Amino acid sequence: ELKVEQNPLFLSMQEGKNYTIYCNYSTTSDRLYWYRQDPGKSLESLFVLLSNGAVKQEGRLMASLDTKARLSTLHITAAVHDLSATYFCAVTGAQKLVFGQGTRLTINP
Amino acid sequence: DGGITQSPKYLFRKEGQNVTLSCEQNLNHDAMYWYRQDPGQGLRLIYYSQIVNDFQKGDIAEGYSVSREKKESFPLTVTSAQKNPTAFYLCASSIDRTGVYTEAFFGQGTRLTVV
Image (cartoon, rainbow over all chains, first blue to last red; front, side, top):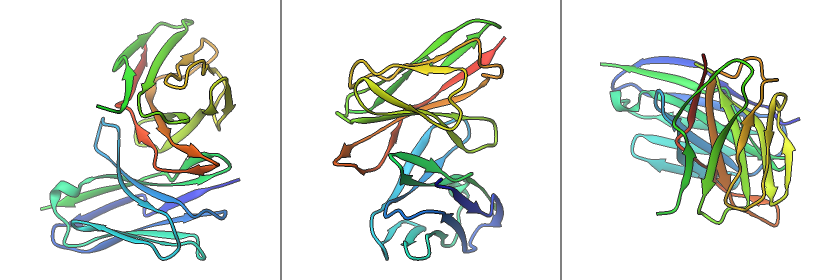
């Protein structure tokens, strides 16, 4: 059974700092997705990572995928308050999309 | 514009009542999904469908039912057997070509409350 685990689950950081969210998954998959969710809202797609070694960047966010280690990272550079949200990773397996628990990120001025 | 439409946005259910949540997509996607999200929690898969007239149970299917009579539509019924239905329900769709799954797009969600 495919399991997806994120850590940390909660992250409080100051503006201007760097940090990384980790996403581990239990079975082979070559497709990994990162989503953002604001309170009370739906999920917004951030990144789609389709192969080993894939790296994508958008603004202060950068995502990477290591399929051999079954690990993806979401790196935040010089955080700003607008990035406060819950971030989910998701992996496809057995014809369905399985999500991690989410990381609630709070960025303080 | 292409997208996924969920309705209603807010829904109130009385004890013992069945209610149906609507999900429609005009993206020509084959695969559709229903997730449940409880406050402060992640997403749990209720049902999913890869093709018309076929669907599979997810991790928490008990107390729910679905149908997939049309490619565009995947309604979810929350039955009276679901004892704790208050939650945020999200519908998603993705392309499925030869078993290769691409990015899933989400509707805006339906917030269901038992009164």
